[in-house]
Length: 111
Image 1 (cartoon, rainbow, N blue to C red):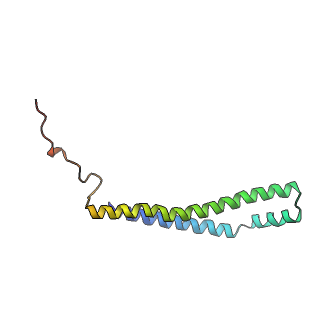
Image 2 (image 1 turned 90 degrees about the horizontal axis):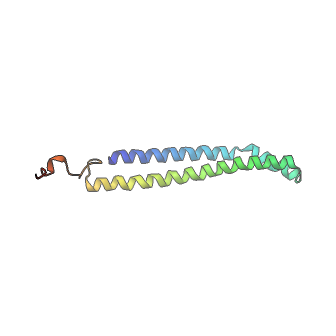
Image 3 (image 1 turned 60 degrees about the vertical axis):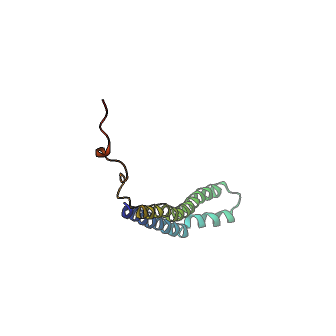
C-alpha cells in the first residue's frame, strides 16, 4: 500500500509539473495578449480594441492561473501522500483491512 501511495505521489508531481511547464510556455507565447495591449495603447478609447484586450486578458489570466495552480498541486498533493506512505511503513500495516478483527476471532453468539 505504501508503494502505491509513493507511485501516486510521483504521478501527481509529474503531472502537476508537466501541466505547469505547458501553461508556462503557453503564457510566454501569448502573442494575442501582447498585440491587444499594443493596440489598446495606440487607440486607448476605441471600444473594439478594448473588447479585444478584455478577451485576450481573460485568456492570459487563465493561463497564469493554470501555471500557478498546477505548480501548487505538484507540491501539495505529493506532500499529502508521501507522509501517509511513511506512516504505513512505520506501522507495518499490510493493507486497507490490516488490523481489523477477522470473522474467526469473534465469539459465537450466545443463545
